[in-house]
Image (cartoon, rainbow, N blue to C red; front, side, top):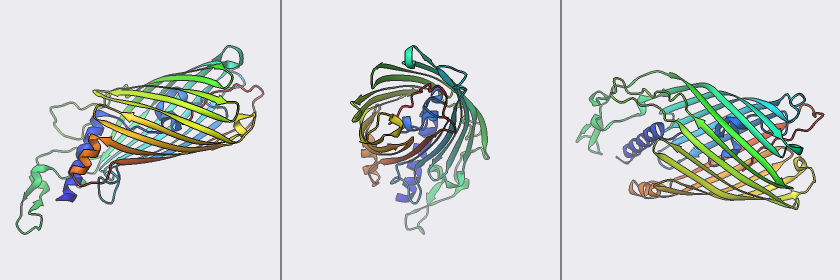
Length: 359
């Protein structure tokens, strides 16, 4: 029965995720287009390629991850010659959210556009407005699901039970579902002293509140609720030797809330007055909290010549840890791997510096 219990618990967790809260990343600034559409094209270069992979709760199910989320994005910073103190950002992001070994497989394909503008001398203040729209493709493999009313007593089975799908009373909707999605966001940054920056953003996701119709003839109307995210941070470069980056994120969706906060410190192992030529090693310790759970998140990263790589590990504590122990599972955990590169096909005549938040 332990294997079946794992499957049932994973299904319940997947259902809660579908109807309560979207995907989330611990390294949220490493995936800018899933964080805030206003960050599209907001970097010092011509193009940016970003990839992130999250594997969450691998010990819950057997031979497959409970939650697996890869994402890749490509965006461009355009018209910097014509927009004297800013740029037009355009981009494309793909997110694949797999739950319980693709029992639920959700694909987001979204296009982004943003207008980023600088104000004042040396663009000390920057403001960005972004929009994002596209499609969400939902697909469920109901052959991997087992429901309570489908089990019956079977003395010939060592476990004492067998399963018959025909006994289950659920009427499930087969096939892939195509939905429309729309997101919007704002982002602001201010250089208030040499080497010191403060920044903040807001994003609204799931404005269309598309319907989740896995169950046929349901009396309930399951719609993805809108998600509101507020994020911010501070960068303090210490005499070109090191950098401190405290930050925070708060998001709410339906009745669920989540708070992230922490500090990342970077040591410039290769120093240069030009930030794009430095090599920096980053170490961070972050926290995630909601009403019932607490997660501690150590991070490590490296940046050199517009290339960034990062790794984060989530150690879930609180109620999640107790629930795992009750079903004999391993400690709830997750890990993330991130890669990004900012490239330049040409050097602009006027360098309208745009800020790219990190870690």
